[in-house]
Image (tube, rainbow, N blue to C red; front, top):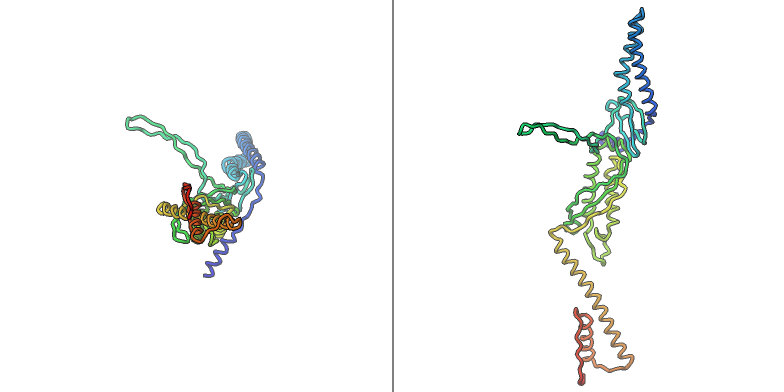
Length: 345
């Protein structure tokens, strides 16, 4: 058990070693000059073999020239690396972590190191022509794109937009939700060596964190409860999702810059019912406001009549007046007035 804990701690504390590489242009020019000298030395050695009495020194010169031109020179060329801004190379030396090369420019590193990138590569495609024979006996040529594996790790801010998920909220209602996550690699050693594929790992952790957070909140909440909901508190929910994802991808050396909800809706099987519910709730709120306003207007009308001593109404006539005013004020259609030419009594 203690060994498992120690291994996990080693993974979490995998330190990134930034290499101090040499100037690649100087090494390139020097290697080209030495290869030219090796050709000159080879020719000069042949001349000395044919003319000189001693062949030991010319033979040594020929062997050194051939070895450098055919073996050493190409090996040195393999150590030249070109990096663009916000790119990095994780290098291993015979299976052991050697260091990370960062910064834009032309560099020279140990020619025997190997670049490692376990994530899904962003291939640079090239077209090749393929010739095949058809049924008619004629040769046809078509092109195919071939992906060239890119071992460089991008340090830029990248966007992850997973497919929408169907999740049950706190009340058990199925909803369709989608998020977009802005992230970047901050520790290349952890990204390459702690997880198998850090892009797939991030995608899986985003889906898991989204499911864990969404099930804690309802889709919508009434104003009286003052409860956080997915629709009404999207900013707070997004921050919780971001924190949840960050805690999961720390082992992979990733930093979550931002997480935002891009799609939120009820699942199709309950969308129509929930729409009717929202409409009914809106109608009830509107009717409640209308009734409160109508009662206030009736009270104001009766108080004004009493204050100005316009007319004296008994309780029965007051009830009739209140009923008529409420019908007029709360009705869906405009009231049609009827003028009584006789006595109201």
